[in-house]
Amino acid sequence: MTGIYLIIAFVLAVVIMLLMISKWKVHPFLSIMAVSLLLAIAAAIPLKQIPKVIGEGFSATFTSIGIVIVLGAIIGTILEKTGAALKLADVVIKLVGERKPALALELMGWVVSVPVFCDSGFVILDPIRRAIAKRTPVPSVTLTVCLACGLYISHVFIPPTPGPIAAAQSLGIGDNLLMVMGLGILVSVFPLTAGYFYAKYIGKKIKSSDDLSAQTAESYQVLKSSYGKLPSAAASLSPLVVPILLMTLSLLATILKWSGFWGDFSLFIGNPMIALSVGVLLALFLLSHNKSQNKKEGTTNFSLTDSTLRTVGPILLVTAAGSVLGRVIAASGLMEYITENAPILKTLGIFFPFLIAAVFKSAQGSSTVAITTTAGLIAPLLPALGLVSAAEISLAVLAIGAGAMTVSHANDSYFWIVTRLGNLTVENGYKAQTVMTLVIGLASIAGIAIIRFFV
Image (cartoon, rainbow, N blue to C red):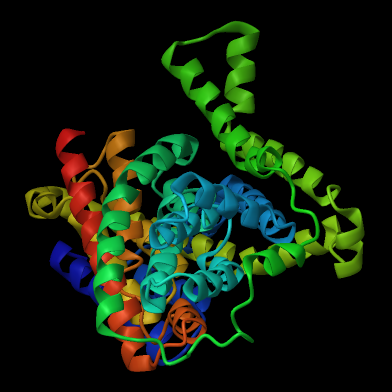
């Protein structure tokens, strides 16, 4: 099949996939797998080779990234259920100060959503938002938008959230998660700033329909007491900080070319899979912190792991399906045609993954699906886009994340969580949440483009 027909087949495949996911409500896993098979046939890949291509693409995900996603999710679940995430939020409030509650909420959300899904994070922290709204003159809508903004940014940018981990692995830099984290933190400055000022602006334009009665304004102290005695700040931070330090050690071993036992040990202990395993062990100590409270709520190692696996299972399957699609694209011959016309794609460069992810996000709602699917699609295209070094590919991961939050609207569960818990009408939800995600998405890709200029 000639190049132009491959391009047409590819575009049709994407359109069909979007229709299946968003309009016909077919599960993303089945949609992506079906489209991958159809594209393989349309691209004239020999029939006897198609099962092998699909199998290799699927198994590639579980070879390494599957374990990393599960471990990161287990850490997040334990931090959430033990109150450690709330302790981290408390630390942020003390660092920022109570005189800037909107900024404190935004940074609190940004920190908490590193290990915890943004949906869960908003539910956890919303009582704090309501209590702050009750005690300060800051508009409730401003606080709502700031919290939603902070949670969303780290959710799509900073591992161990599953989306960025999956994208990094799909793009071939699964062993460079530390670089993705570092650049993710740097890029976060742009949308955090834009989101903060937009929150202050929109808070003056629209009002929450709820009067924040005493029944809903649960105090911060009541919220903390519901978890029993919270773990210490050091214990709460250790499952996140220690893996980062271990991965830093591995990076140093590579840069300084350490050899012998210590070089091998550093590379071993700093591997993302091993480093996050250490993080899980440290997180398990949090379960022993308040045994009586955990026993009362039925919180055990088994129950937390089981609930985590139920959550990440669909993510792993969608990630694997995205890898299959990427493998089919690579085997179709489309890459050779695109490489011949590389100047066209190079003019888009880092903006191409952003645009693709934004289309997926707006069409079907899930940021994680948008991230994993886009990563599978563009993985074979990276050389044609001029993105070859680890730093450039890390920025591509972040560009996908930026697109995957542009925009959140009625087909996104996070939109409804923010709108309902924030006591906003649907119309005001669009003005607050949807426009905010557009603002921070554009600010993110602008920041990424600026950093790309220097990389």
